[in-house]
Image (cartoon, rainbow, N blue to C red; front, side, top):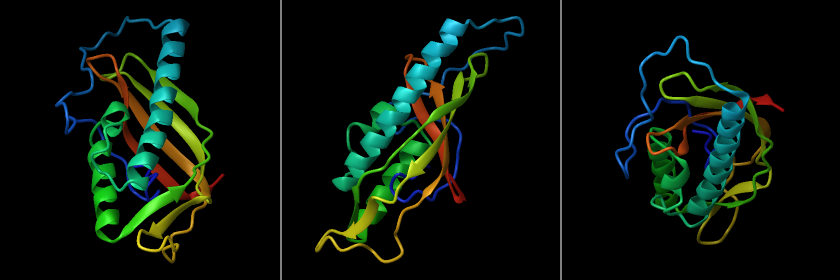
Length: 177
């Protein structure tokens, strides 16, 4: 996940969401299909909105130590949804939470509306220097949990109900930006 939580986890593929059982849209191959520029622009805008919602929902859930925060299912699909929830739960069990802000500057790197499911790839330069892991009992920063400016990538997919959800992501902390 682009662990807004810890900005350390890996990437995955789509599957049923924990809440709804929805799967990314699946379509048969359409070798002669054409996609209009307008369709691509709509997909870009929807994917970037889902990405911004993902970052905001994850920050809110992390701040409240709530792995079942209702906004998570609005912007995340599995396997990323499950990974975020597990990370929030584990952080809470360790007596910690995330506070502060993340500065994000995402761009769309590719749009594939012919794929199964349709996908949009996003690249971001995340600045997490103001996003801290702190102990809930005293708000002191957990040692070794400092942030950085680094590359992050995410995959948004269109689900059968028309929603674009972020279903995969990765923080590339070894790649500063």
